[in-house]
Length: 195
Image (cartoon, rainbow, N blue to C red; front, side):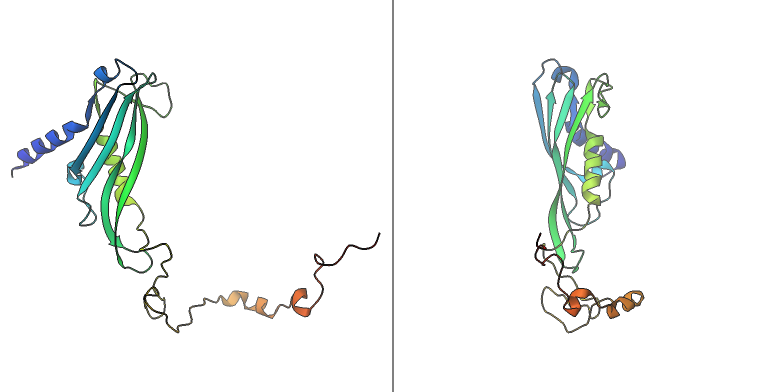
């Protein structure tokens, strides 16, 4: 396919992310939903893994007295390695959004509507980039990880390696004998003096 055909295909696909704000703002409370599944490459983003090829977009544009509120999320299928045990993991990374667009910006967090067509492609691109930059997850919440000595996956088996990390700078504290170690009564447990 030629570069011009690719760019025209991208323009057609991204056109679904344009909202006619003149029509939408005529009546507060009016809504327009956008549900699309688009290639990540359309946004100029390289996929970091084989599963991250498409972005599922679910946005709702609502006309309010303040402007146009855009809520929803984008989801990207991801794959990678567990950050503790390096097992292969697949997950869906979802990034929510709640943005306010205004013709005349009166809210410090609002984004200006510059024309009669609100282009949501930059918003979707930013949300997709956030989804792709998310930290790798764990394969399960209680992942034990790999043994730092022998490399054994502690989720599958246990090893006899001594993994306690000692800092010799604190070795002198091992010689410290505390009162409770000597059998002295704990002041918190002693009865109140007669009074």
